[in-house]
Length: 629
Image (cartoon, rainbow, N blue to C red; front, side, top):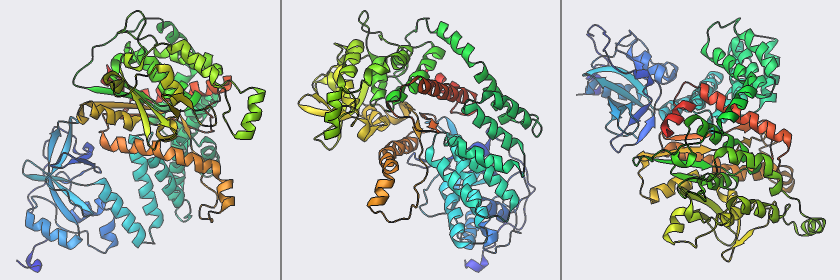
């Protein structure tokens, strides 16, 4: 049959009818292939219960590309499309079509679209069959982005609108995972590009609100507040006051936040986000009383739960110096809510530098009962709040002169060693209750050394004491001297592996656990995002490197740990991988342990938990607790 003889669409269309389904098709967000791999897709568009034409549906999926290319949108309706018609449409619109069915994925226990072939070309439109009827169309997220960027390169007339669509896409994806740095940064960038076009006032307003929302998520509260102040002279809306109330709540201005949130109700009487923000403001207002009650509950004993052999839970904690107080507070809250010790909920505890102190502390056996832990998370919180000054003991005057001449360490090792001996003296790594993974860097080797309970018990390494492990992984360059152990010099594991999640996951696979049975909770210690480089396109001469040395060095260390977060989110499904991280407005150094810093870190930690508890998706705190309990 010649291409000209193929009839595009269907000439005689039976009456449109809705097909009953026991699942919500637009909420299916994954496409599964025969090899078991999953990719993300955009919301599917139902076509069995509306009168939209096939071209209109395709144009919506492809962000208006068909209309831009001059195609007519007045085509016959989709219904019972056969392979010949799909092939003709593919040639006409230069789009690959793939038939899919709907099935329940046993790995994630969620409905997915099941395809039989993985096209490498883009874009691909997936035709959803159900009960021998075509009921919906969807497009993969990669195809959606591909089409938007292609239109952005080829169409200069709608640049602002395309940037806005890209920003909305990244914002929507970021909201599904609030702590994905790259998604919020991409959304922020595209909203900023829209602001360069001044013609569409309504679009400028929406882009400014979106840009401020991204800045708030990235911890840039001052910048967002200034933009909102300028916007208020032109417009006022519930979104405007909601963002301002959130900024005030997060920056310690709760009294102002109480008054600001009331202004939202002028525009929105029953908006879910406004009601949630009002609840968070009230929670912060009564936090002191809540913490006082929690302190009384902390005196109650914790119970140990029996391990489920079908699952393998991993707790991973980043390095970050005194900022380790944040994950310690989070873990204390988890123990309080579940009434179980962390060592009975996680089969593996991994930590770098300050994270290793928490991991080893929670897995250290009791002197009386070897199967019970000696410390609980609240004890680790007290260690940070009451004994941090013993770790950061400045070098003596003589030592300071030596350091000035040789660029040696800032602090003495004696205080840190004495504290570790007081808490962990005489305990071998092999005696820990759970699997332990602690990275440290050997000065004369090209890879990171992992201290693991697994290898210590098998005799693959010399059985180390916890004191030596902690002295090795906390020997931060310029802060402390390298730790001499086993004829080698060890420095802080954060130099190469500040986020040990990937190492912990790899160890779990080495121990024989399957990917589908692994659950990971990865805890950050808070971070700070520098402002963009000045003159990013300038020549990279000596003056440039000197002027921007602080930002460049920080980026070099941060890239690895942020990449690990992205990689883990791709390896494990969204139900089995959770990342908790905070972004500070101002930088907090790892040796800053003053009273004001303690207050700031506590506020950030409790604010994060309150917001996590108020979420209504699979990232809310209750979902994690149910998974652990």
